[in-house]
Length: 210
Length: 72
Image (cartoon, rainbow over all chains, first blue to last red):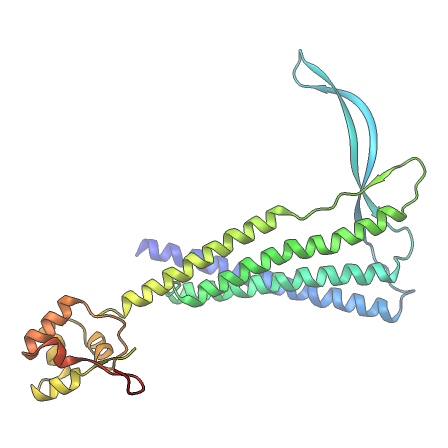
């Protein structure tokens, strides 16, 4: 009895947190859409603060104090700065940034929606159902989608900005690549989803064996 | 699946109710009902054994292979 009580507390807490996140996500979605539309209608009134990560070359040398008796000479060769517009951000960049965020938020909506459905099936006491396997599959796909979308939006933006930046004395660099962590975690969830689906099918089979 | 369960026919012949058979076989009414309506995926030999014993019949009396599209 005690353990089931504790379990229900865990479920309730998670449910409350997920519901809060759900609301926050929709508020973010509405706010950014309203801000975007208003900046599209009245560009001169819009005040967007956009920062973009920018890599540049640097050759600063110094000393690293490893311990009291050991010092090592080191060089910093590359640094990351944040590009920020001092006056109005070009509308094209605003639109680009909005679309990137929209895709990310929508993928998060998918993940949260599925998580909420899963936790509610857990609350009912019947989590080992085929639907939850399918929901997990959606979550895994959305996580991989997040990684791909991040790369798909950040690579062109970085290339565009670094090739057009002109600040005397600084040599800009760019690095392109896909965030492997998203893909790896997404694949992990997909494998778990498949295991879950097969498990649910086995349970169904077992239950219908008289 | 083309395996048909004719449990109701045999139960009618033996004049045995669902409740009574469930009790004698030692499975729940719900499970016996799943079996009777043909929703079951599989049947344990132990269950088949008990049903045949209680209804005094052969497995072939309650299970039948129904051919599809007239093909044997």
